[in-house]
Image 1 (cartoon, one colour):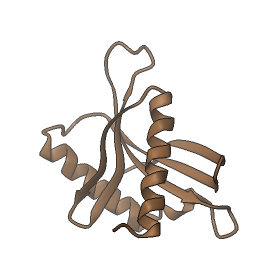
Image 2: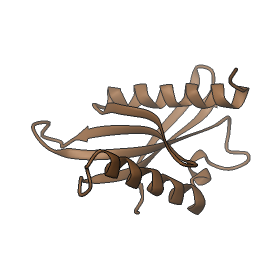
Image 3: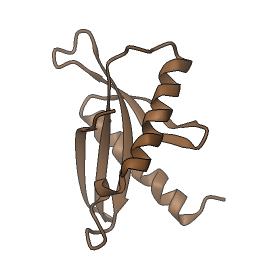
Image 4: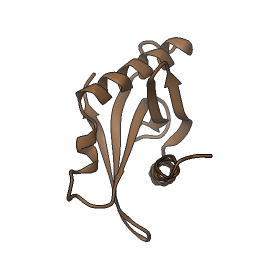
Length: 127
């Protein structure tokens, strides 16, 4: 049985996935794991012309009730970034996608209930 923290994490990932799909992203995978590293969402973001090309996007989702402790995106520290990069490299290697244009985004969710603020930070960090 999932813990309350796991249930909240899954709910946040679902909220983020819906938000990204509304922006035109295609969700390819959820909770990709490699060893101890995990990427919450992996998506494809088409180029602006929508005809060809785009980026593979590795997305970390963070949800906080408020900013009293810290902003959601501040939880993506150096150690978390290293784990995201490790998992992304494994994903690319497993699927023979090395050299594919990709980036790392963060979806920061703040609030609770029907009062949610969702911020999508594209290119949140460079690997």
